[in-house]
Image 1 (cartoon, rainbow, N blue to C red):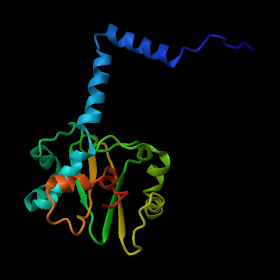
Image 2 (cartoon, rainbow, N blue to C red; image 1 turned 30 degrees about the vertical axis):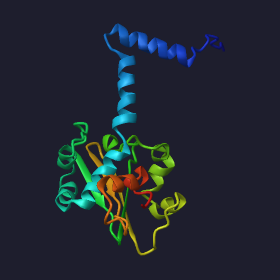
Image 3 (cartoon, helix red, strand yellow; image 1 turned 90 degrees about the vertical axis):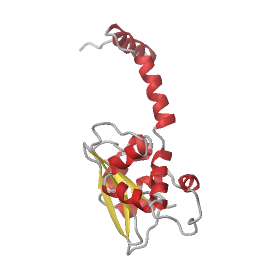
Image 4 (spheres, one colour; image 1 turned 45 degrees about the vertical axis):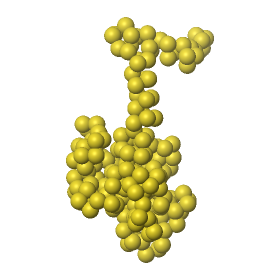
Length: 195
């Protein structure tokens, strides 16, 4: 039996090799990474989804549009979604129904609207357990819902993305859209937290 004693390249060396090959083929990996980083941190943020919800709370016609045709509502608000996100479904929480989203296959979200998925959302334990034991998973995450509340779990598909519309907190009737937007977290848009 022989053993291979070839040294393994460091991660930096491997990255340099990949970038060199991409550049030889006319691609611009550094520029792409810089552009993607800016999009992810400056443009694809939870404030986009929070703004949609806050507007819906204050504008009944926009709320109806958001709940019936999410993609059109997103465009009307001046936001965008990738072409493969053909359907954008907004799930309204009520006094009797609590919605939560997941992606059992990987970690898909409406990332341009609610931001990139948090690490726990990508974790196999969350992805596999929330569809089977949602109430327990939510409780473990700090959200203990009443026993009589129905929990609905929505699993992302190849062309459908979801977002939760949390219930508007009482006492916020006089708040502006910007003030309401500031109340809404990414976790609330996923359905693992209340406002």
